Length: 206
Image 1: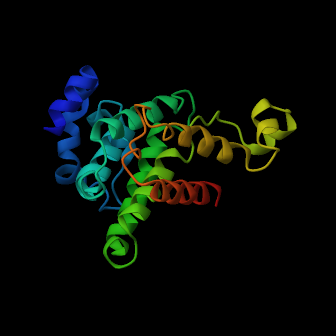
Image 2 (image 1 turned 120 degrees about the vertical axis):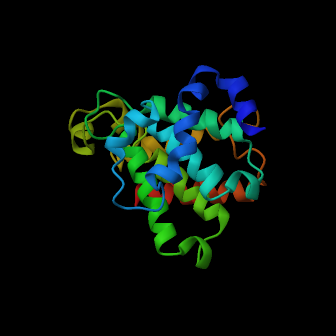
């Protein structure tokens, strides 16, 4: 049912990456193998590694859509929007890097058994969101460059953790507003939304 709902909503994109999403665990050991090479797998994911890996981990590996009652269409919309915000012209802080960090975070949770022994579903979700967002809209230069250039983004964030603050702020705006198509947290109680937000900010700024 979920795949049909997403297909109706996202048409061409779903057709392009639905099959690789199904292959994630069997062929690539997403979220389970630190030797997995995200760069090599990008062609298999139809150039959408962050959507593919993110959806697999949130929906299938950790079963958070069912366990937390999340809207899978909004999870999908969120991932598509975030992946589009990673600049293809950025040689390092791009969508492949974000997908790789997300995969490795999930792998550490799995191999160290943190998922079952220490962390709640909300904490796992927040960690995945932080990994997905951590370099969102990264321009390809560092904080010092932004500050020295007097860039608007540096002024906006008072020269403090400029790019990290910007990634967190802009990414979390996608998770605000009851009717926002990317806000898959809208079904959670306010206290849980605040918890996810606080963890995401702490992790990205760490």
